[in-house]
Every structure is written in structure tokens, then in C-alpha cells.
Image (cartoon, rainbow, N blue to C red; front, side, top):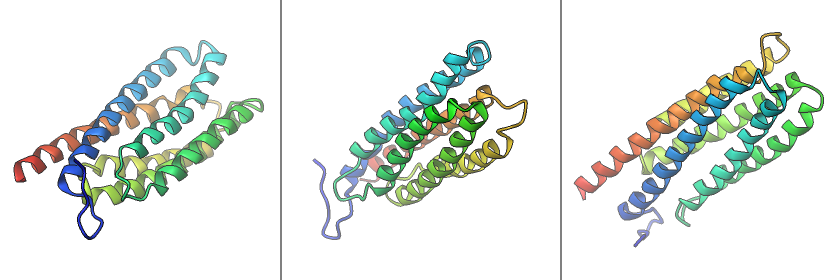
Length: 196
């Protein structure tokens, strides 16, 4: 049973439950990212409508995944970064749909802005979680890299070589970071049980 000590800090039992939930979520996000990467790499250049759908699905999935992320956390923990990130992803989904009516370059610029904002929120969340849960360095690095990648997407959006398929690497790295974080959370939980 989850409990909280007098200072409002989650106990070890609660941390174990949170890390288990996050680990499962990170593994699901890993599978999604790698699947998205494969679909974009294999089909984006061949079918523009399918490519557009994939571009819309990515931030929409992020909003859904963040919802499950908030459910993993105890009541005592502030969920503001997740709520802000979910709102950003939801707004981005609509913005990508509207931008695609103007062109791929415009959609890539919206996606880039989202990558910067979502990466910043992920960086903040990773730094906050690092103290209580551990296993967050991949998420911290991923947040920083997302901000850099987003900037590159905006700067290069009008380059002739840029298309939706150029985002495949972004998803692959995201999947790798979620996998690494899931592994680190497993190790942190194992260590926590050994020390209890």
C-alpha cells in the first residue's frame, strides 16, 4: 500500500509502484516509437496521405501516453509538467493538421516547435524524478536532444531534402531513450528492494 511520510515525500513502497508503472509505459512507448520509425522509413515516401497521418499520430500518441504517465504518479506529486506537456501535444496535433493544408514544410516547423517544447518539459520532469525514482538520465538527455532536433527541424523545414521521412531518426532515438530509461528504472527498483 502506498504511503506518505510526515514531510509529504513518497515512501519507498510508493516509489516501487511508480517505477513499475513508468517502466511499463516506457516499454510501450519504445514499441510505438520503433514501429512509427519503421512505418515512416518504409512508407512515408511512397504514400503522402499515409505520411501525413503518421505525422498527426505522433503528437496525438504523446498526449495519450502523458495521460497514462500522470496516472502512475502519487497524489502527493505535482503533475503540472505532465499536464502542460499533454496540452502542448494536443494543441500540436491540431496544429499539424492545419499546417499540412499549407504544406509539409509548415507541418515540419510545427513539429519542430513541439519537439522543443515537449523536450523542455521532459527535461524538467526527468530532473524532478531523478531524486525520488532514479533511472532518469536517458529522459533528461532525450529532452535536451529533442530541443536540439526541434530547432533543426524548424531551420531545415524548407530544405528540398526535408520531408516527413526525415523525422524517422527522431522517433528511433526517442524509442531508444525510453528503452534505456525502462532498464534503468528496473535496476533502480531492484536496488531499492535490496536496500529495504
